[in-house]
Amino acid sequence: MQFEHFALTHTGLVREMNQDSILALPRCGVFMVADGMGGEKAGDEASAQVVKTTQAAVEAFFKSKPTGPSQIENMLRDTLLEANHEVFQISVREPAKRGLGSTASLLCLHRGVYFVAQVGDSRVYRLRDGAAVQLTHDHTLVWLLYEQGNITRDQLETHPERHLLTQCIGSQKPVKVDVFEGDLQVGDTFLICSDGLTGYAREEKVLEILGETEISLEQRAGMMVDAALEAGGGDNVSVILVKITQLDAEDNWEPEATAPPTEFTEDTVDMLIDDEMRPQARPRRRRAGLLWGALVAVLAAGALFFLLPREAVGPNAIAVYLEPAEGVALPAGAVTATIVSTAADTTASQTLQAEDDAAPSFTVPGPGEYQVTLQSAGYAPLTLPLTVPAAEPAVERVSLPIAEWTRYGTYTLDYGDPSQLSRVRLFRADANGRVPFDRAAELTVTPDQLAGQSRLSFDLLPGEIYLVQVDVAGRRPITHEKISVDSGETVVYELNLPPPLRADNPTTGGSQP
Image (tube, rainbow, N blue to C red; front, side, top):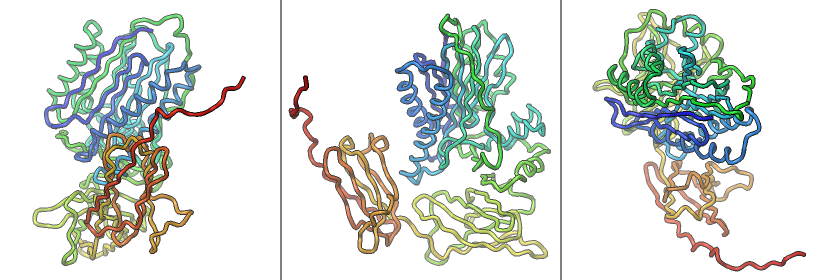
């Protein structure tokens, strides 16, 4: 098989950083776009980790010849599941980056078959015989409305809630990876792109450019990016084009039947992620007439965990303002409120918004009993009850008293060269500083996570006693006992590693006839 390819990424006209990452491995026939999210919480790091994990897995896999399509499907699915784990671990190691994530759309070409793996709303299109089709299904709530016939394709592309994702790499739970395959024909041209392209340039314009087969892939990619920039360019734009130019006798695999793309149900969705956490100037179009009627029909099947823009809570929404007690300082960074409705058995999450000369606030849909969990980087999660009374006339705002909010202390392990470390584990000890033999580690850091870092930081609860165990290759573990920190305090422990074992010592042994 022979193919041409061209990849292009652009920061856009508004953002200072490109949080998209692209991967092109023509020797393996693998191409990917990953679109990071998380605002200031390292979306670029998330997408870069997805690409890094994918490249390592793909190159290792193709060192031997796969025997059938199912092997490649399984590899792609496992790779994105591993990427999900690795991105989530970033937020575990660095709480300030909680909320980061990435999409991933991947194309693999092998033995006459194409394979697509996807999480999120980055897309893969195929042009064949002048007709273009979208191969992937967006993992968004609005896509479900489109599939159910509640909105048209045009409304799908301009819907004000199109940024709400149902799947994102970086989730605490394993994601549902869409993997499917199809046959290849000479002339097939594939487009892999981030939503910075289709979220600005109209889809019909993008597909019109894709179909201009008389010009090069490079020219077409440039025209697509220009179209997005001319339409506002408020997001990063990434485009990869791949064209099949020749199929050989060995390209004789037949596509196998694959599962349909993930459906949005109570069992498959844990969270709707607001990808407008990306710091961009996406144009906010006037709301379409159909919005919450259709969404309520979708969500009525059961209680889901979802993240919604603040203005979307409902017409009877009541503002809840944080009211700290005297001497209690609220976090300077972003605060997330997770609101559980006791009666309705539903859960929602919002990022608190500060008002002029007023404390940060969130909203609830109306009177009732709630349980609110507040989270912010550097602070322990705080769970409080909230009662919103029914009254005539209806109340428009209530206060949530904050009597205290525990701020973590920080323990930093400075080890310099990570090459000798094989594992670092954090345990919570008892009052005497001992760790029960059956107690699991609070956190385990592996060599891959240590690579390239000279120090490691943990958030610790004030007043608790901890133990850190460092496994050193070829030596007994090093233990730092009875660690305790005060609220807001940073303790740095310099670990003096012994010299590495010599690798050139002769070994003894015998030969056997």
